[in-house]
Amino acid sequence: MSGTSWGRYPQPHDQRLLMLRDRDAPLPDFTGTALPHGNGRSYGDSCLNSGGTLLCTRGLDRFIAFDAERGLLRCEAGVLLGEILDLVVGQGWFLPVTPGTKYVTVGGAIANDVHGKNHHVNGCFSEHVAGFELLRSDGSRRWCSAHENADWFAATVGGLGLTGLITWAELRLQRVRGPWLNCETHRFGSLAEFFALSAAAERDYEYTVAWIDCAARGAAAGRGHFICANHAPAADGPRPSRRRLSVPFTPPLSLINRASLRAFNTLYYHRQRARVQQALTHYEPYFYPLDAIGRWNRIYGPRGFLQYQCVLPPAAAEAGMGELLARIAASGSGSFLAVLKVFGTRKSAGILSFPRPGATLALDFPNGGPATFALLDALDEVVAGAGGAVYPAKDARVAGARFRGYFPAWQSLQPYLDPKFSSSFWRRVTE
Image (cartoon, rainbow, N blue to C red; front, top):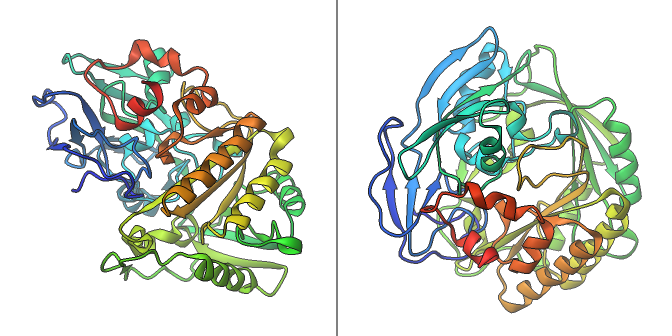
């Protein structure tokens, strides 16, 4: 395990990695500060602790109990979401909330209070956590849930691993009839059309999300594909290949550039000729398209990339997204997988949970040095001006003053911080 983030920026310095294997054991001795580290799928520095220690939880990978009648699962914090799906889907259960990769640990999903394509229906991951054990550096342990030590629960979900180590958790699963989804894809030509499609689909579909062409300009600006889906009745359909491609090495330069981005996005937009297309789809390619490519983060070259995910409130969403996309397109930078989604009104208990009513945009930028950082600062101006926020789990560079403006309740977390836990992110945005 390298102890790097998925974006491979910034590169951490002098981190010590300690593997945890026994949930009942005390924390190992460490000098300086420590931070729990799951599978390293956070994009920025929230999973890094330069100059300190990472407590690697992938060794805590055991299932403890599964009630297949009620859909209650107990497991250790280092279990991957994909490992849970391998266990439960065949027995008629599914994760109520899942992010865009299944290679996330349960502890990481709680610490970042991840969201998915069904926020308007099921909210954040924490809403389906019956409870978890929190181990502090002083050796104390407490059970945290919405009803017991609820203040510690609120501090820890979305708390970025700073309140202590989650050793194990109990999750409430969702009943399904099989691994299939009925999907409907709409090709749209503008942001106004996207917002209309999203508002209509939320009434009938559990999952809604859009791919948007962030390189398009002029009359084509705001075009994309809107994909809505529901779990299907038990059926047989095309199963995804278990053969996994992988990027074998890091190229000397990023393969994502102005020319390749524009060509890919144009081809991707026109791949669907019909305005509306329906399909029976297995859950893996729908929820986890990039998981089919191992180490895809290498395509951005040795300097890595920065993911930018923001949310804008409803009143500013359409105009604000238009301004963000215009600035991105003008820069010639951007992502081949830009994701646009409307959050629902469900409120998480987490003090630092990111989702809130409005629209959220997520995309990747090759690290092009000062020009990239200048663009992201310009995007911050739009987001802050609209009263929005940037997602801490995917951030690697936002200014401390911006973070404190995005999350004005951040100081409420202070009484619950473990005095011996810290992260590169937390020091950057609070010191």
